[in-house]
Image: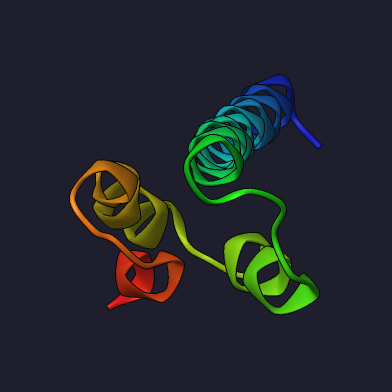
Length: 75
């Protein structure tokens, strides 16, 4: 591996790590909001959060304050 390709590989993995961190942070924020608004979360809801993309999490993140029922957050 040349120095240039090694740096590209390092940069690519650094960027992937940053993206993963953003997804985890969005997931944690949404989880905290849901627990605060609706109480403890079922395994099904936890699985939905854990499987969600960053885009889905961003779509859902404001909904706990807009809906009456937990299920409506995900519609």
